[in-house]
Length: 73
Image 1 (cartoon, rainbow, N blue to C red):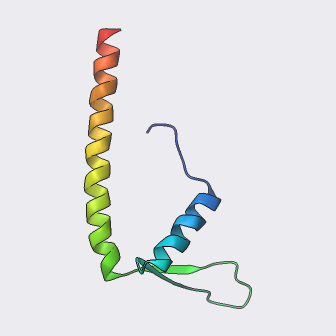
Image 2 (image 1 turned 180 degrees about the vertical axis):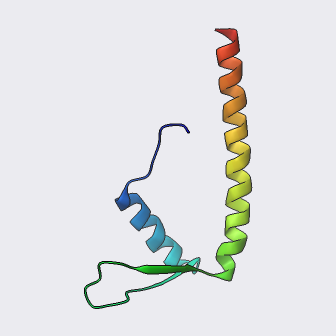
């Protein structure tokens, strides 16, 4: 919606950090290591609720600001 999308490298770093803090559990299904399976944990459910609420509020604020800016132009 705002023209931003994360790179693969950024997502890999985030996934690794989430595994280190027990928000995700991952494993390699075979020796080739081309696909990593990631699963959420109970801790990640609580984390998701907090992040989702924060992100929703931030998007609402940005949209209000943009609406105000466009209205005054």
